[in-house]
Amino acid sequence: NAHIICRTRDFCFVLNSKEVRLKSSPADLVTETDQQVEKMLISAIRRKYPQHRFIGEESVAAGEAVELTDSPTWIIDPIDGTVNFVHRFPFVAVSIAFTVNKQTEFGIVYSCVEDKLFHAQRGRGAYLNGKPLCVSGQTDIHRCVVVTEIGAERDDLALSTMTSNICRLLRLPVQGVRALGTAAVDMCQVATGGADAYYHIGMHCWDIAASTIIVLEAGGVVMDTDGSEFDMMSRKVIAASSSAVANGIAQVVQADSFLGDFSRNRA
Ligand SMILES: O=P(O)(O)O[C@H]1[C@H](O)[C@@H](O)[C@H](O)[C@@H](O)[C@@H]1O
Ligand SMILES: [Mg+2]
Ligand SMILES: [Mg+2]
Image 1: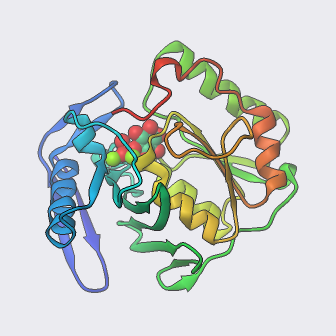
Image 2: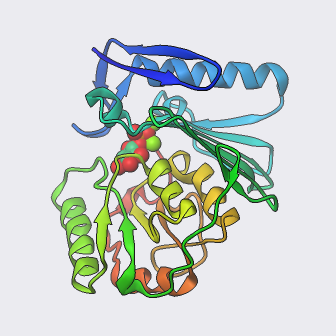
């Protein structure tokens, strides 16, 4: 059984996950807690906003389409870092973003074990537990700590793409490469200035929708891994402290044909 104690200033509760099941790969896990948290969030929001749409990781896993329209839409990852959650590795987050006309209006990432609440609203800055956030402003790729993710894919092409990208960055060299096991929290490190950049190939919109606006509102930049304009549904992202660093990463990171048929969001 996996469990985690979530504390906030106002309450403390224990989330139990009795059953761990596999989804797309032996490293893509889901627990009852993922499903219950998503249901709880969607039903609470729906009560207040019955017309709004939802893209939720576990609803998509259950067969719902991933369709981002102009309608007000909530993009939810009920537990980002489910492998961490199951193993009690202490980086686990709830990620919620809200979009209108495909533009993100606000994002919230709650890193449960750390009791860190990141949030940002378009045009109103980014905050961690109420304090304003600012990226490092680093412009020299050689002085960067870069965060990425190993991902859940375990096929040869995915693994060689992931490892060769890390090798290319280390050879530049950069000063460090890190992976916390939750894309949402990884990306928030860029917003705090603790990391200078984050890139990921193969994540889904629910992993990074909220943290994208948090990085942007903290003064960072976001782009596709090929250097083109960021598309939340493309499953590729670079978030960085400056355009110079983002472009430096885009020059070395290759997506190749890794995403293949899976190049749009699906569970
Ligand atoms: O499935 P969850 O835990 O919501 O999301 C995780 C991704 O599946 C995995 O690929 C990635 O490495 C991890 O960081 C991410 O957040
Ligand atoms: Mg996730
Ligand atoms: Mg999840």
